[in-house]
Image 1 (cartoon, rainbow, N blue to C red):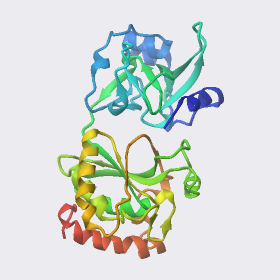
Image 2: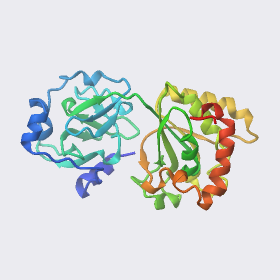
Image 3: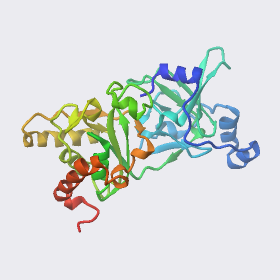
Image 4: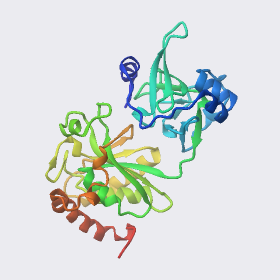
Length: 325
């Protein structure tokens, strides 16, 4: 999770690398944007407070840059700051936004810009709600709402190569991304996480269609495909990065998770030690760690560990598979 110290460091020492860059001429931006959008995003203007209804919008969705469509914020991080501008506690990704010291007024501020196209978005302040304490104060005209049809679930159940391989077989699952969450270090490398000293867990983010498969069904798959009673370990994989986790995004997901955990508590000989926590931030794993089993099925670890788990998984959850052949 980003905090004020990290923001100050980015502004002073350099920002994270963007996933891509978009460069256009002033004439091209003028042709694409409305007059107010151009004034705010390309000329560092500020819209009037309370001039947009976006402050009162809290339904599910995402917010992207009006200039280049880069995803900047999720609705789950939005809150009513009472300032008259849309406010958020965290960006969608660490590298979605760049930061620059702004001394244009009598007091120094930190300006926020789209890290992809350098569009002025607003400013960030250290007076937001816990746990981050941040308030991203955004110009509404710099953002555009993107409807969110797919849902996302985040689980940790040991090595993400194993968990990814099983969830890929489920109907309604659109995409899976392996990575790290619930740690202290910003944007850790795989090698750093492997030390067990960053606090991160190996997790998967499951994008799914809730009309096809429910969060409760995903929860039951998660709890049925790893051992939730072994602390910081799954088989021979030992370390805090292999802990059992459920990272919920909404109160409803939390309620469902609590009910499933309570229901399953008598099904195990030992106490369930699964961490149930609110999702904060996700860092993708290296590219060659995605789709690992499918790309490396003949590798020793895959044959010895993942393949036997898949056989058991397919028998247990046959009714949820994309194919029941």
